[in-house]
Length: 168
Image (cartoon, rainbow, N blue to C red; front, side, top):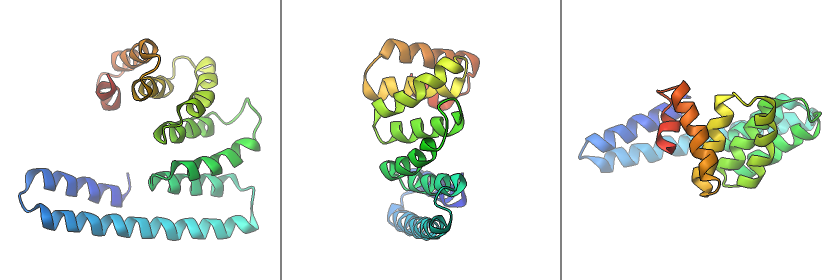
């Protein structure tokens, strides 16, 4: 979590506990606007650097991450996809998982599962993969039995996993 996200969470907590929500809302809006400005400037810097190194996996993933932080998942997927095209199908599990996350968060569930299912076949015990597949089942209202099984397993092995508990 970065400092902008921390500030936004703290302001959300204050708004929940405080009656002076107008000032808190204004402060939250100012932090959110500053966060977006900083992220957009960083994206522009990375895009400039990509002109010199168009195949730099690090830069491509950094741009994807910044777009994802802004909630622009389709843009994020474009950059992760460029990295995936330069990889063999058997490599890059972390990048494939990131693609699956961004696709799921952007409600492109089929695209998410296309990356996630091979990862689960290769590492069926990976709790992060199981959690995401369970969340996709809940969010898409499809394969609920598989989702409940995955989420239940995650909670059984990691009882304090809040995202899994919330999805169940």
